[in-house]
Length: 224
Image (cartoon, rainbow, N blue to C red; front, side):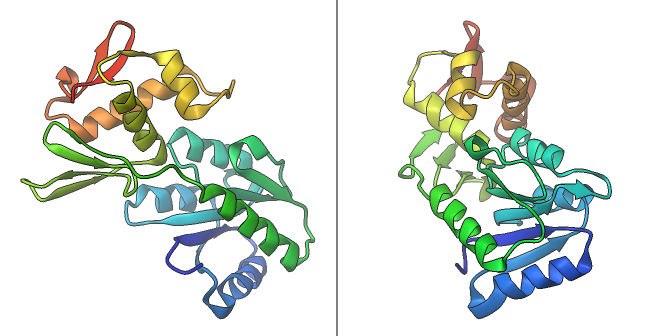
């Protein structure tokens, strides 16, 4: 599946990483990036140029638990499919698990199944927000006059797209939370507020006095 982003392999076992790399890159099926720790994962996703198709991760990492790393990815808006080796599955969160030792064919089948499910996305949406052009397909805001492109996370894209669909109506926090994160008891309004804060830092000239993504009547709306 060339061109669809790299598969991030996270395992402290060099032999396991090499085995997975050989299988995944065979016949140009996937590109691969290797990591050994939670710190490596966070560094990869902090890099705006990094494009991940999926993550295959050992549940027991040298500096943390793979489930906690998965939760960190979700909290920061990365909806990438995750396969946890010797971990616990969460099908409702695009997370699967496979026990070691495993057959490589089984792992590859699971990976392709998850990628196919993840690829079913709504049609791209484009609209103007102040000086920006929003493109849900690119997950970006473009400021043509300033020749500037702002990359958005999956959740940031979903927040803006949903607020736009609601027009001038202020969307209550709990409604927006359910729309973007689904019915996940582990996610709170604090998570939403953190994403709103980061969005404003990206798109507002003065984040403390927002004029594009505004707070109103206990919720949020776009001034479009």
